[in-house]
Image: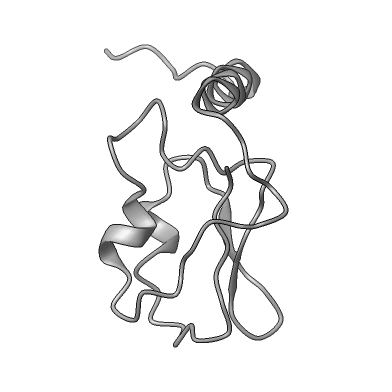
Length: 90
């Protein structure tokens, strides 16, 4: 499942930096979530971090992008493979 941000969003800026997949971005009026990048934090956290920090509870499940847990895991793996490797620590 992907999440979505409703028009109740107050643009408080707390959700965007919490997203480990960088799925949240500023839209034309409010923040939006890219459903192709949203894994509901599967692979990173037990619960969606944006939902945890949202002060107005405006981040429900997107009704057009309902996905099973295994599908979210597959999306997480695909996104991880697409990221360039981190430089080695010195």
